[in-house]
Structure formats: structure tokens, C-alpha cells
Image 1: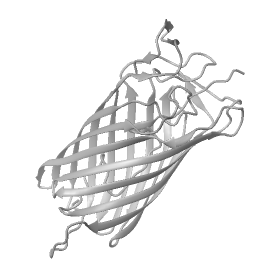
Image 2: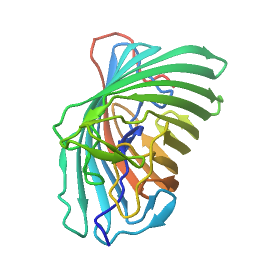
Image 3: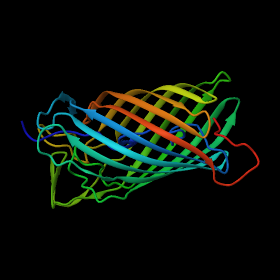
Length: 313
């Protein structure tokens, strides 16, 4: 069997990403939720994430690859959410990522991936219903190899994300959240003079990476120190090609992912913990991964105030 395969992109961020991302971590307040830090208050989140798969979709063909065995991506993430006003938060994050395979001789990769900056603004908040405009950008900070998938820790794209999020929260604490995003991704340079994409030979080291989009829905409960939810997410590239038979993935591939998962947080006072788990139900050019993350949260006031300020739901 040829040296081949697939990967789960960490930028999708969320889904890209991040997901993406590649690896995906969840915190007390994220660019995909409706939770805000109060003015002059911040929250530092440290997390560990783990994602693994032993089957992947080569185009639409689900298969194994015994030259890779089980592919694992792990990450350690530091994220800081800052309350500028009660309706405006700034969120920054930096992940350290490492990959490995249980079989074969592909070289494992590790290093800092992409630093991200997000602005989250609540512009409607009435009778339990709120609308949020969210914008984000990321830039690679590590000198990692983007075209050695699935072992690469990222694809070296600069990204810009526009997201609209709506939430309704009942007085009982039950809430429903829905969001949609479009992710603009820059071209990348690779360390070779030519490459194959969509059946054509390109005599260049510049690769046009397709943009991406995602949508999600979340049903949960949040009151006092407790938050719990179930969610479904879909992410896809806006164009791109497929993994060729018995070939390795490439940054031009049109990766599509449908996943479901659960999330929970407990934060009685300044210190809290959270956990997230998800499973890829269906996909194209991605691994059928099982993922989880755990995190520790620390909330603090960066400007002293006489008023007791907490997170705004």
C-alpha cells in the first residue's frame, strides 16, 4: 500500500478550525459562543486537546492506511478573553501542536501553529434573544511544513473569518445557539517547484488554498456555575480537489466534516474547568476522528473596581 492519507485540519477552526484547526479546544468564552467577560475582567484558559483516527475518507471512499495506523494530533492551547465593554470582547490564542502515527515511517511534526485574534460584539440583546458579530484573523507563527499532510501541524495560511451568531436563552437557563462563518485563506508557498492539483501540473511553488465556511447549532443549559450543551457542526472548503487514489493529502483538497459532540463547564468562582468531546460522523478528504479536550479557567479583574463583575451570559 502506498504512503498516503489524510488529515484533520486544525485551522478549522475552528473549524477551523479551526477547526480546523486543525485540533479544537473549547473554553469558557470562545469566538463561537454568546458568553462575554464583563468590562475590566479577563479569563485565562489553558487546555489540552487530543484527536485521533484510523480511518479516513479519500474523496468519498472510506479506508484505512496501514502505513499510518492510528493518526494522533495533540495540542496545548493558551487563550485569553478580555472584556473591553459588556458587549465587546477581545480573544487571543496560541496553540502548540504535535502529530504522530502508530505505524510507518512518516516523520512526526511539532511546534507552534497559528496565533489568532478575535473580536466579539453583541449588537442586539433583548428578551433573551441576542445577535453577535464576530471577526477573527490568524497568522502562522511557527516555521512548520504545510504540505506534509497528514503529519503537518497546519497549512501556513493567513486567515480572516467573518461570523454571525444568534442565541435565544430562556429564563430557565436553556439556550439555543446557531452560527455561520466564512473563512478567507491566503495562498501559501511550498518547498518544491511544482505540484499536482485537480489533475493539473502547476509549475510553481505558490499554492492557492480554497476558502472555507462552517455552520453550527448548539442546545444547552447555563445557569450559575454550570454550563452543558450538545452541538453539531459542519465545515467545508469553498472549492478544491480530492485526495488522489493512494496519494497523500494536499492543502488544495476540499475537506468536508460533519461532527457532533458535547461540552460542559463548571466555574463556581474564579477558577473553573471545562471539557469537550466530539466525533466526526461523515466527511470528505478528512479523518474520522474522535476528539476531546480539557481545560482550566482563571477569571480575574485587570482593572480594579468596587463592583462585582462576572461573565455575561
